[in-house]
Length: 140
Length: 123
Image 1 (cartoon, rainbow over the protein chains, first blue to last red):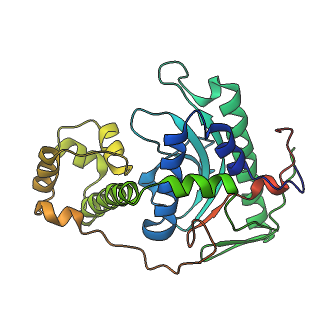
Image 2 (image 1 turned 45 degrees about the vertical axis):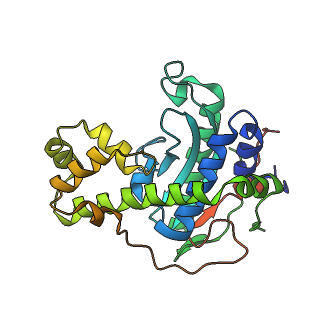
């Protein structure tokens, strides 16, 4: 919510830190490695989790595990972290089939659309590894 | 305003990651990055590499995700396909980066602050 201290990613961690502690730690470790060493290489993400061309992707989890964290990549230097949740193999085929995952993916799809619109209108600028400008988003 | 310090929960979880686990993660991601770079420098597509390895492209995607735990045999097969010594697979190029001391995951800017200002009904 506006003025909320927690971020989408904070909620993701809070929601999953007990039931999926190993997976969450692995995701944090991967994010730190991406941030400090290798950058947001395309291969590290499961692409095309949103709509065509919107950059919504999911960070790959431990093999055999299915904790999805939705992100938006802007090249290899900027990643917007969203929320996510567990995607049980064989039970949920696609995120669209799970209400929680659909909600989290939809948020990122909307954020992506708004960021794109604001980049076009120059309300947001990508400068190096920074997104600068109006980063306040309203639910449609 | 964006918050740049990790939440207490994130800080706690990060503190639980052992140096060995960190090293394993970095090695796997670096290995994946190196293989991906070698495929590209040899002007091969991932599909062509998959074909050369007699693997499904989805298997190659898993290898390049930086999560795969390779066997020695597989590494030898990959090195052979890429015409390099196995040891060369572990020479990964790092991004020249500036470390921001207070940021959890800089300098690639991982923006987790969106919910701070994103109106939603999620608790």
